Image 1 (cartoon, one colour):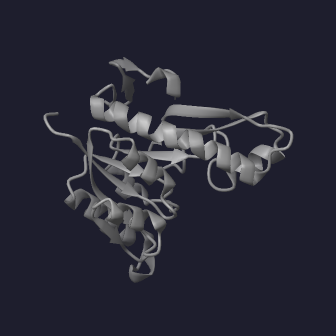
Image 2 (cartoon, helix red, strand yellow):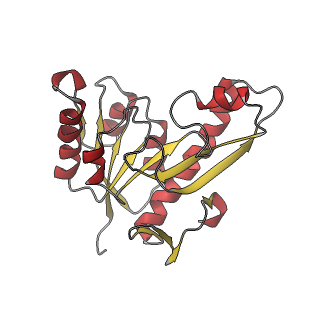
Length: 211
């Protein structure tokens, strides 16, 4: 590619992973940040960085699929090569996801396939796990079920709480997501019906040290 990778991001919350992506200084062009919440902190972060934003209200659409098509249509209109779901807290219609196969990634706060969905830190503690982590995966119609390409891990201590786990893991998320996006931008990580890293099929998730 003879130009920077064009990236769009969707987020529903404060946008700390988006902020980390912006701060990483990668050779990318963030062309749009979108949200399902007009009050999302991610939109303010994007606006302060001069990045175009859009917020659509799901209640303005007859069906979930209609909303998804509208929002993802804005992403397509922005010319994005890669879509990053950075705390986008919605299940996306399967037909809409299909159009972005191999071009959309999500960061999730668990060591997938463990703990898909919500309350991952609580579920980790309740299970008595000694290890927790975050995963970046390609997005498919299956909730948090696409091919995992990279993970970051932290130890779970005897005094850990949901809040302490979340806080410590967020530090690793802020390293992991830019590393994966950077690998895609450089061509080291790509999708050809499956994930390839340095030209070879990815047999297991990468670690931060692999980038």
